[in-house]
Image 1 (cartoon, rainbow, N blue to C red):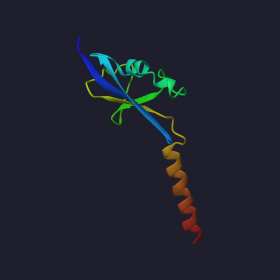
Image 2: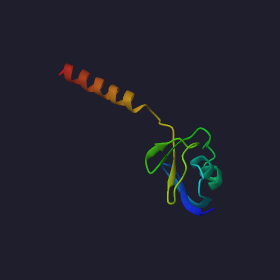
Image 3: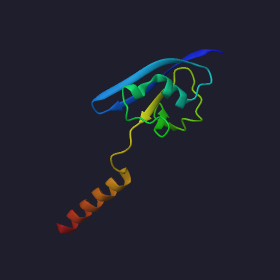
Image 4: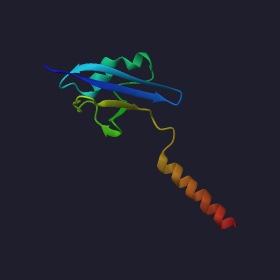
Length: 100
């Protein structure tokens, strides 16, 4: 079996980490995250439930077979719903405009 190099990445506003590791061909994203031991650096990560992607494209970590050079990105939960934030901003602007 052929080995390949992949990366696992996670970032907080003040701390980032990219871990390069060698895995066998056919490795899935979830296994690469577990093998990287990134949870030792960021214990808040739950690899079983975390949202992940490869170069910004969402994946299903339990099904995604990695290719040479892939970077598995672990995404943090959103602090607020972007749709709700946009809606609130639009309503605020509308109310301000109606006052004028």
